[in-house]
Length: 388
Image (cartoon, rainbow, N blue to C red; front, side, top):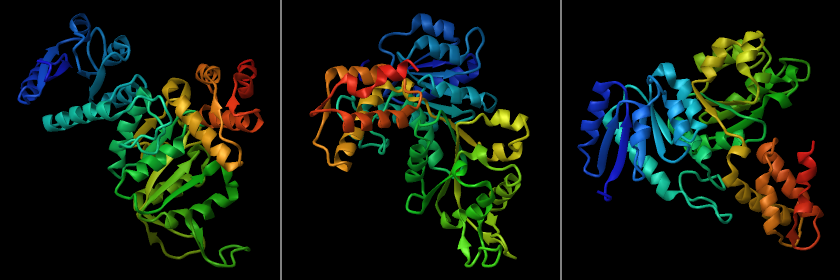
C-alpha cells in the first residue's frame, strides 16, 4: 500500500528481527519487511523502500559495507551496541540519518522513524540562497552529510553531555557549537567561545579560571574567568589539543567536581557549565605521545561529532557563496553583484582544502576585485589555487 511507509529491517539475530517486525507492525502506517543479512537485503530491496533499519555487526557483510553498497539510494537508521558506537559515528559520513544504541524501546525507534521522515519532507531543494526555517536554522543549506551530523547534534543538544567536534580546519566547528547551544535547555544563557591556540600559554589558566586581586604582579583587580562568565550556559573550547599538559588535570577536576578556584583564591566556586570542545588535531596520537591526558580525553569525548569537509557537502557551496557575496557587497558599500553561470560551475568544481573559511575568502576577494555587476570565473582565481 503506497499510503504506508515501507520499512526494511536488516538484522541477523532472529529474536531481535522478529520482535521489531511484530512491534513495528502494530503501527498501521508502517509496512514492514525483514531480512537476516545485508546480502539478502541487497538482492530483494525494491524501489518503493522508504527507510532501512540495519544492525552494524553482521556476518558476511557488516552494516558499514551494506551502507556503502546502498550508495545513498535509501535513507538508513543504524542499530548499534556500545561496542560498535565508533562505527555508528563513522556511518554518519556515509549519510546515515540516525542511529540508536541498543537496547532501546520500540516507541523510541518509532519516534526516530517519524523524525527522519519529517526531516525529509522539510528539507528544501537548494536552488537559491534561502535560509532553512526548520530545526537546521543557522545553516544556509543542508546536504546529506550535514543532515546526518545535525541529527546527532540535536540529540546531543538535549543533554548536558560533553561534545567533541572534530574535522578539518574551516569546516564550521564553532557554528556547530552555537547550533548545539541554541537547541539546548541552556539557549537563553551565555555562549562563550575560547580559542586555546590564540592565548599565550602563561595566560590560559587565568583566562579560564580567573584571578583574585594581588594574585600576581599585574593583578590590580579581581577578574572572573571564562568558566564563571559562562555559568549556566555553554563554554566552547576550540583547539583543545593546544591546552598545556600541566593545566589538563585542573580542567579535569573542574569537569568532575563542577567547581573552579580562581588564581590566588582560598575557596572554590560552584559552576554549572556545559563544555563543547573542538579539534582538528589527532588527539589519539597526542595521547600516545603523552601530550594529552587519556582521562581528560574520555571525559570530553562523551559524544564525538565529526563534521564533514566542504568537498563532501557540495550542495551547500552556492548558498554559502551567495550569502557571503551579499554580505561583502553590503559591508564594503559595493553595488550588488551576482555569479555568472560559469562562475557557479567553477565554484562547484573546486575542492576547498580550507573549507568554508576558504570559500568565503574566495568570494570576498572576487567581490572586491571584479569589474561590473557579474563575477566571472577569472575573478575567482580558483584555477591558480588548484595548481598549488
